Each structure stands twice: as C-alpha cells, then as structure tokens.
Amino acid sequence: MGFFASSVPHAHEVHGNIATTLGRQVVLHANAPSISPTHSARALYVLHCAGCHSLDGSGSISARVPDMRQLGLFLRVPGGREFLIQVPGVMGSGLNDAQVAEVTNWVLNTLAHASMPPNHRAYDAAEVHQARLNPLVDVSAARGLLVHRAQQLGLTLALAP
Image 1 (cartoon, rainbow, N blue to C red):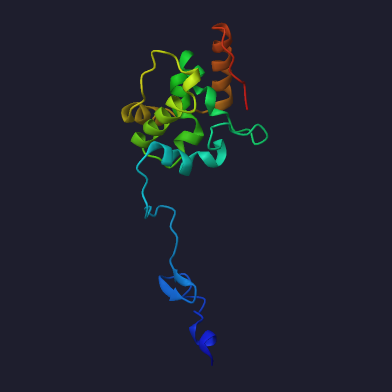
Image 2: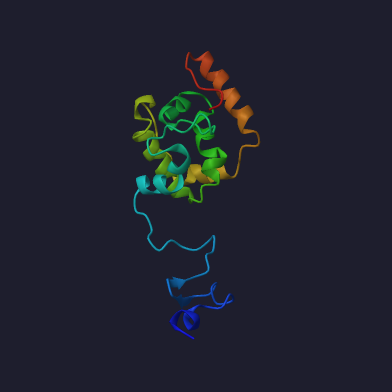
C-alpha cells in the first residue's frame, strides 16, 4: 500500500470535516454563515444580485432579467416604490430587511441615478419588513398596472424585460 492508497478517504468520510489529499472538506449547509462577511452595499449587490442583473445593472433581455438602471422611474408612479422591494428577486435574495434597504438605496443612487426623482426618500428596514408582510401574488399583473399608470403620467416603463 503506497501513500495514495492509504491516504484516500473512504466514501463516508468525504462528507465530514476531515483532512484529504486536497485539503479539508466540510459539509455545506444552505444556512451556513459566511466566513467572509461583506461590509458594503456594493459587495452585497455583487454577491446577491449581479449574477442575474450584471455588474452594471443592465440585466438580460434574453433571460428576462430587468434592467435596473431605470428603477427610479418606478418611484415616480403610485405603487412603484412598494413594487421595487416586493418583487420575488428581492424577497428571496437571502438578505435581511436592513440589507435589502441598503442594497436598494445603493442601486438607486448609483446604477439608477439618472432616473431618480428629485424628492426621493431612502428605503429603511421597517419599510422592507412591511413589504415582506405583503408579498406580490401576481408580479406580471402588478407590473402591468404600474406600466399603465406610468403611461398616464407620460413615463415609459417596459411591460416585461
């Protein structure tokens, strides 16, 4: 028995916290805390949003991922403010209420800055918490209503990406 034969872990050991020839292997858990927590809204955006929305917020038409660079237009339409934090991607992002507020404010102030209304009020954790209590049932219908309201105000919102 050479080095490799004696040091290869058995199948039942591979899933534990054991030393292997390639380093340590641990069992992964969906709710495991990060070993390198982020400390900025931008970092949270990169980790939780950019995979679909891209680093610049442009989204993807072919994948039907919305462009976030015009989000400020939603803030000009009645119901749009609530919609932005009630969409499934925000609600299911894995971020807590304060983080959702922080990332949403960062996106609006950076990626969507050109579309922002002048009197915008920042989101806070309490507002996000309230939105989580009232999730959207039909996202398409809610967006359709906002598009209609926007048209009445002379604004153009895309019906769907």
